[in-house]
Image 1 (cartoon, one colour):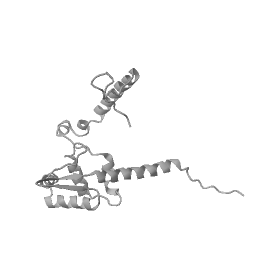
Image 2 (cartoon, rainbow, N blue to C red):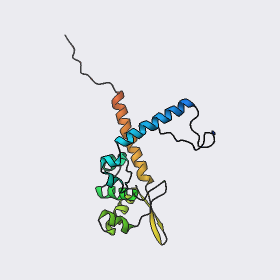
Image 3 (cartoon, rainbow, N blue to C red):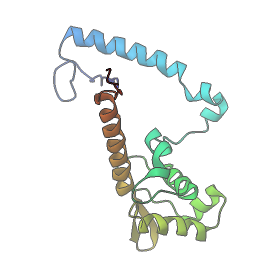
Image 4 (cartoon, rainbow, N blue to C red):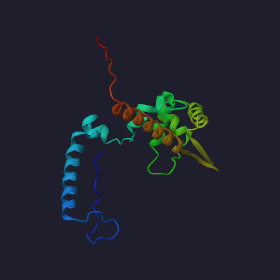
Length: 176
């Protein structure tokens, strides 16, 4: 995984100053140039179209897309996964998103009753905590889902590591 360097506002060495030598400065500039080239190669506009890229997008991690149907102890249905993706449209930082059920239902093309069922199901599976607020929309805390995904990745990485580290088994035959 490549590291992107944060460029401080000033070179005084104060808070936010992460580059401490000219060598690191050159590395950061090289990394920035490489990141720029890679960003151009793998841009949203190239993958979709420029006009669709301008319509905004929702960041969804691959770990979610590749593992929602194999989470333990309960997998997510396709509808629940789409509900989570739509919640992510309203998640801009660590805070729990708080869109209304009707808005999510309209975006998903289903009834608000169905959206409530998705939320209840995720809550019963232990992946979602709904935080009710008086006269305001609920907050949807997804940290338990994120923890389950991280645990799933750890399991998969352990299996991969075990596979790589274990010597191949060969069957030997004894000769007479």
